[in-house]
Each structure stands twice: as C-alpha cells, then as structure tokens.
Image 1: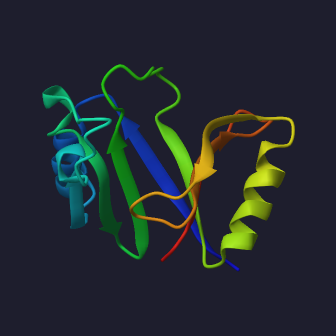
Image 2: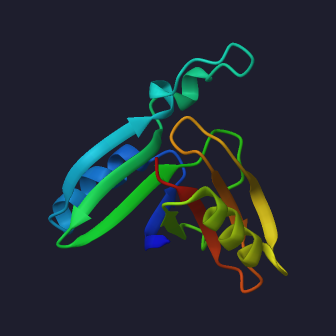
Length: 139
C-alpha cells in the first residue's frame, strides 16, 4: 500500500543552510537531520571529507505536511530546475517494485531500486514527464 507522497528538495551543498532557512521562513519543526558523515562506514566506498557535513536527509514538519531535504553528493550533477523531487513511501517490498516499474516505463532510472541501510528497497527514477521520484519501502 502506498503510504503517502511528499516534496523532497535537493540542494547543492547548502542543505544545512536551507534547513535553517525553512525552519525560520516556514516556521518548520526540524524532526531530524542526518549527514553523509552519519552513514555507516564502508571501506570500499569511504565518505570523502567534503561530503561528511552535507545533508543526506532532513525531515521537517510544516504544519501538517512533511518536507524532506538533502544535498547532492559531491561530484554528482546538479541542475537548477531539478531541486524538487517527489518521495513516495510504500509499506510493502513487492508494491515498491511494482510502483517503481510503472514509473520507469518511458522514463529513466537514476538509481536502480536496491536495499539501503535505511530501506529494504529504495530507488530514484525520472518518469516520462520529467518528474523525479524517490521510491522507498518503509522498514
């Protein structure tokens, strides 16, 4: 079952500043901020120093609405106009595969659907209309 969708803002290294800005401008409550430095260590893919303070995921609450935010990882492309994506959370792995498959029809996979340390399945896809989706199964 699809649990919900919410806006996801993508920043280019200024995520910490953006969190503070939206906290003030939108009277948002900051529920959590995780940086790339908070990720579990992986000796095969060490986190570069310039990435450690970048926001991997921030969760803000604006009224009754969830607002998510992250920075790009250093070296990944960033294009103005692509700062807003939509996150969809699902409570079932098979449904996650199904939704991801439907969204990729005629679109382009950015990150293949896979297990991550925060989700049994997570992937990113830009649909045929140019909308980027972050699809994940909640643990």
